[in-house]
Amino acid sequence: MIVTVTGWGWAATLGGLGAMVLLDLFLVTRRPHEPSMREAGAWVGVYIALALLFGLLVLSLWGRDQAGAFYAGWLTEYSLSADNLIVFVIIMARFRVPREQQQRVLMIGILLALALRGAFIAVGAAAISRFSWVFYLFSLFLVYTAVKLLTQGEPDGDEFKDNPLVRLSRRVLSPTVVVLVAIGTTDVIFALDSIPAVFGLTAEPYLVFTVNVFALMGLRQLYFLIGGLLDRLVYLSLGLAVVLAFIGVKLFLEAMAMNNLPFVNGGKPVSWAPHIGIPLSLAVIVGTLALTTVASLMKSRRDAGRG
Image (cartoon, rainbow, N blue to C red; front, side, top):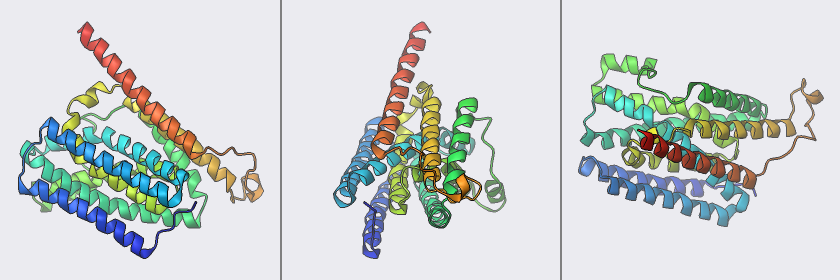
């Protein structure tokens, strides 16, 4: 079933998400502090529950396939965002942001990232609606990113470099604003692989947008919750690479099925291209990330025992 959202539907969605953001922002600015593990865990649980409930709403309105696409997209986006938290840690350390102020900085930086991602999603959706061959570009980029992730692994402190906007901001803005610019723009750079990955699961702009909102809004609390856990997820890059490569292949097959490029099959759709459905996609994503997490924790435990 196609996702049809009226102007009032968009207004209600934006209003509800906006209220959630404002409440979160109010709680952060009212009492700046470093949250405890219990507090951070509780808030992560709240945002996960909200995402699951929203998926049930999608299920009731547009059916199982669209709900599955939302859950698969949200899980992929959330996992990729969690993997990128290590760069946020580097940014905070590099600019010496006090721990009690990091909640506020993260929150405002994420809001900036949401605005930039919204524009990115709008451009991507417009391009896809007019040029179906964009799927080819997205698929090749996702496979390239997967290979790069396999060969280079996790970023470290030496690999992070200021982008041009951050360097310009250093000259004219306060250090706090520079940190916000660094977090917001760095997140958009990360979105170059995560948003095409979600488009590979669903071409519905409404679902792509809500997936990104729910993934990013739980990111601030996850930053404080996971702490050194990322160091224990030694196979996370491998798992994410498999997910990105799988979605890239799925997207390439869909591009072939709707092909109109004159130099591919004479400009006609490729009839034999297999279709990978949402249930299989969701199973592959959940299974890969679960296996990656379990294997990582087992290896970390063995290494700790040997040490």
